[in-house]
Structures are given as C-alpha cells and as structure tokens.
Image 1 (spheres, rainbow, N blue to C red):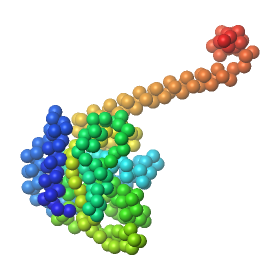
Image 2 (image 1 turned 30 degrees about the vertical axis):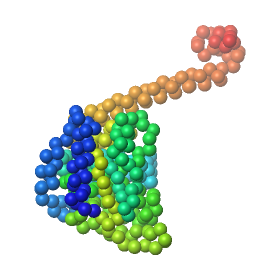
Image 3 (image 1 turned 135 degrees about the vertical axis):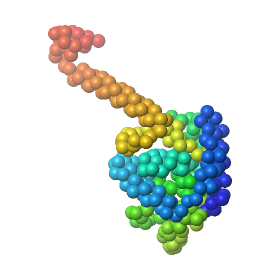
Image 4 (image 1 turned 180 degrees about the horizontal axis):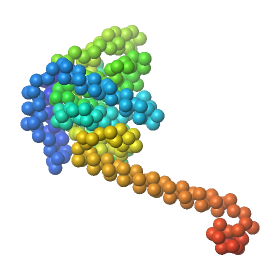
Length: 292
C-alpha cells in the first residue's frame, strides 16, 4: 500500500465529507498538520494492541446476536465502536477517523462501491433496504489502517480458512512504513503461500465521516450496551444514543400494547357461548359481546 496515494485519497475523502455535509465540515488544514507529525512503529503497535484487546469485548457482547460471520456485514458497527474505545483509551479524536470506501484484494475490488452509492445510502438513511456494498475501517494519523472486520470477510470469501483466524491479531493494522504481519493465503488452486497483508490489500478512502454509523443504522441494544462504559463520548454521539434509547423504549411500549391486545383477543376466543362474558357485565357471552 502506497502511503502517499492513501494520504491523497484520504484528503479527497475529507473534501467529499464537506460536500455531503456543508453544515458540519472537517478542517482539512488540521488533518494536513496531523500528517506532518512524526509517528513511530510503537505508536501504531499501541493503537493496534488496544483495538485487538477491545475486539474480544465486542465479540462477548455481540456473538449471540451477530455471530462470527455476521461481522462481515457490520463493518460500520465494528469501526465506530472501536473508534470510540480508542478515544476512551486516550487516542485523540482527530487522530482516528472512520473511513468509508473500497478495498482491493489482489487488485480486484471487493465491494464495487462508489461515491454515488455511498451518497444514496446516506440519503436513504436507516430506512434504506439497500445492501451495504462498501467497507468501513479506521484511519490512524491519516495513513495507517486499523480494520476490525476485514479478516472475518476474508474468511467468508474463503481467502483465509476459519482456522487461520489469528487469536491475537483479529484487527489488522496496515501501512506502507509499518511492518505488516505475514499470513497464510489459501490460493484458488488449493495451494497456500505466505503473504504480507500490505501486499494483498489496497484500501481506497472515499468518505471520512465519524457519524456514518448513526446516519445509516438504527442503533441496536448491543451498541448501547458497549457504550455504557464510555465516559468521553462527544455531544453528538450522546444525543444519538439518547435518541436511540428513546426509540427503543417507544418500540418496547408498542410491543407491550400489541401483546396486551393479543392476550385479550385470545381470551375472547376461548370464551364459550354460555360462559360469563369477558367484559364483566354478568351476562352470558352469547347475550352480551357474543351476540353478533
């Protein structure tokens, strides 16, 4: 992965954000200053280690509902919750960005996404029925990739075997000047070869948007559960979470009302013609609500 190309694409993705959301622009000059800051391999190792440690917390909360292979279709969930966990552990918010775009595997696009498709998903919002044909990951310091869900996707696509999932490195960290780990790659002809992830995957940023998850997804219980421990949520995230809680309570209330009606109707159906009417009038059902 070429760092200069990625950084330029990342800047273009920030500009796309500012076109899509003119009322909530990102400061491109701030990001250019971040690029100039020195970053050591130790810095990337630290962020990668934090993310790898946190993914097991996510799995423990979500496994029963999402399931291992379900993480391939919840990349926006995984990226968002990991970003918030990294900020909670001291990473500056401006240093870690939720990035949406394309991933090329062996120089072939995995998702066939585009800027226009991402805009359509955003326009339709949480009610969209479109398949989320895109990928979300985190960009650290504008040029290092922290990806909590790509490995699950590579297993789903049978690039890696399920047994190849590395217990201590479920979250990939990539970057041209960062020593990427080597993995066994199962070739289509049945053979295997050891490759560096940097050689195998190329990331193409299209949009930078730290609020993408809330824009396109109704917030599930698992997200609310994981957010309970976060003390450094930004105001917008807190507002979105409170809105999600309110919606969930309303839906729960609606479900209870529907269940109550169902129970009443079930009770009515079980009343015999000569039984006392369910309304409490004292009359037989056939002479009261059973007349018709």
